Amino acid sequence: MTKNTQSLSYASGAAKRPLLGDTIPSFFDKTIARHGQREAVVCCHQDIRWTYQELAERVNQLAKAFIAAGFSKGDRIGVWSPNNVEWLITQYASAKAGLILVTINPAYRVHELAYVLEQSGLSGLLVQNRFKSSDYIGMLQQLCPSLASARAGDLQADRFPKLTPVVSFSATAETGIYDWKTFLALAESVSDKVLLRCQMAQDMDDPVNIQYTSGTTGFPKGATLSHHNILNNGYFVASIMNFTEQDRLVIPVPLYHCFGMVMGNLGCLTHGSCVIYPSESFEPEAVLKAVQEERATALFGVPTMFIAELALPNFMEFDLGTLRTGIMAGAPCPVETMKQVNELMHMTEVEIAYGMTETSPVSFQTRTDAPLDKRISTVGRVHPHVEVKIIDPDTGITQPVGEMGELCTRGYSVMLGYWENEEATRAAIDNMGWMHTGDTALMDHGGYVNIVGRIKDMIVRGGENIYPREIEEFLMTHKAIEAVQVTGVPDPKFGEEIVAWIAVKTGTPVTEDDIKAYCRGRVAHYKVPRYIRFCDEFPMTVTGKVQKYKMREISVQELQLEEFDTA
Image (tube, rainbow, N blue to C red; front, side, top):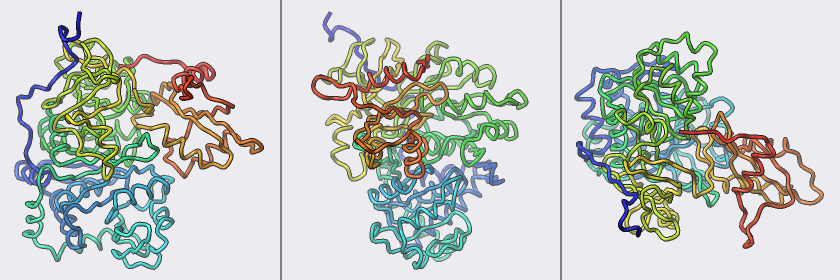
């Protein structure tokens, strides 16, 4: 039978609801008008509880401060902080002022921060002073020694010429850095009319957010997302979850990622729902406490978060009876975990979502009315207003239903491109507007999709996307390393862990502990290899290409690891 006589692996998302044509600021104001007196945000660790009207007052104040500080439409402003209300305020205030928010991973260290500051051309940076082992101010001072003699708002750093104001989310006496209250006071010189004029000058297709994803070239790429991209994706994620203004969502995932700021923050904004931040970063007991005390109806998380919550010794002491729904995404979910979430956490309507930062992020989501086996063993069906197809990666031809190939996505959700990286953009988005995900997938006759594996070498560890090439290039800066190859191996807690195969230069002894110590403090903690394997050679093809699948097989055997079933 020829391919053109069979059903093809193509689906388009039918939609009863039209796409939103608003910018984020205009929709924000509509939500305030509709739900001003409803609770908008609860931040448990800061003991803060605001209505939408109270949130709006703070958002408008910061937006005016941005304008007073001299920021113009299209300027990039960075936020480098764990979860807190200041992060949320910055998300909406930067949009109101016409700025492009660059979200920076709180786990980044000096090496990674420097690249993002430089590549994005940041004009300003908002930071928390420190978090856990990260001294954000100290790292900035290391990169910008001129802070020590600068006046707040007038940093002149040779390496980052556009970066002028650095603003602390709290009180600080550090030279060259704005205290939070002092910066907000700048708003007094800007009128409501000026702020409104800034809002009206924006278009729904303007860029509003840059999120850096690890790159196969060894450097992160800045996925550039528009108002239209992320406002609509947040709206449809929450709509499929049947959200209303009565819903209360606990968000333990980081806000710097689409999961938190788009699916969480914008999903709630578009429905007048309440966001709840249980802690600065994930703490399983804080999550369950927030669900109980705030009578949450929904909970987000990657599978490792749900596993940790279920494993708490005092899990049964928490009343989770108000939970109805939620989303599990970011990594493959063990089927047994999904069953426990359904039964023990009362999340009978929990859904799986699949996507990538470059698609704003969600392309697939399970539905509550789907058969049980489809809800726990697939990533669901295509999102409204989105097209997907599965192609033969060699020919580009759409595969018949039931045959594996590369998953491609097209529609409103596809990013504008990688920031100032046309070559990478052209490699990801073809001439017909299809985003090539690099993931191997399989579609059935009902349009349900399984993500089978990855064409690229990406490792997914606890919801964090890690590209081996980035770690390899960093490790090659170690003076004792001759060659290195990195791949993923299965892990029951994080889904995958990192193993580095290292060939050492003759006469330069080095230990596993030496390698890990070299990584710590220089790259994000989740990029530090869990396993080190010293070797003289790598598995190769006859043409000299490293066979990473064989590296994985050998590592799994030597480390006595086990593959596990996932949903």
